[in-house]
Image (cartoon, rainbow, N blue to C red; front, top):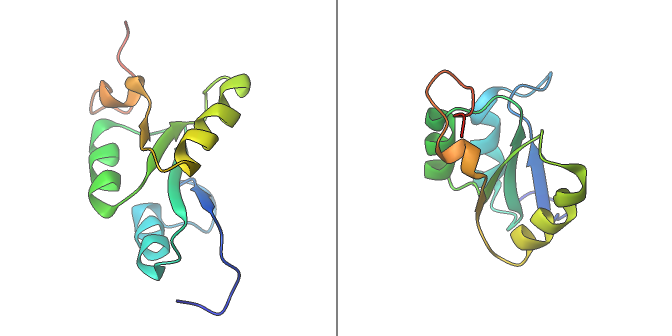
Amino acid sequence: MTDGPNFDLVLLDPRMPGVKGLDSLKRVIDIGSGARTTLFTANADRHIVRRATELGVHAVIQNTIPLNSIESVLRLILSGQTFLHSSLIEAPATGRAAKP
């Protein structure tokens, strides 16, 4: 544990400047703060989703999710549920969501 503040939820984009992909996600989870760790990204394929869930992420949210859905999804995550958007589960390895 660190001496810093405790958070209920951590949103992490693995492609933000200063963030080193899933290594940063692993470091956040390893700190053991108890925060619900969420990958929030535009560029996730099934391999990233699989690796993130193996590391212990609680949710993967495409940042293209409708704005009016974000609050509901965050409440779901904070209630202890896991969230993976269906487009991510069906995403091909190219990083683009499968077309319906």
